[in-house]
Image 1 (cartoon, rainbow, N blue to C red):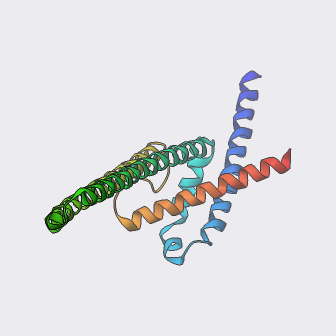
Image 2: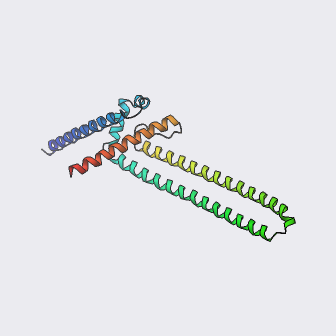
Length: 198
């Protein structure tokens, strides 16, 4: 008798999973209609069905939420690093202006043109250094964000989320961003439905 009860529970569980899959697929199909037509065409029924299957147990929602939080922390950290560098540059410029003013005030009038020429060269060298440091910081930021994107793609690919793999192709990246947006919207709908059920 226990064997039949177990089989019945598995059948009921399978039917629930199938119903949940259908609900997710239906929701995805309606959300896809909000995307530009060029992306609608690239999201086949099979891709959406595979995505719905990956979303069934809720793990992917948690993974996406975790990736989003990591991304926000990374962006905040990189933003703060860039702000610190800008503040260091601002302080450096102020100190240089102050130094130049003091030197000009202490300078004899006949030496002033020579001092001003030297100060101009020093200012140009400092401005060049500042531009180079800012360029290096911006490159570091772009590389770090690119690494984060690749990590996210790899994580979602390993989780079995349809449409995700490591790529730098702009069209594929845009498609993946649209898929992430679909997942986020489904997650928000799920939260809202959960709140109304309470």
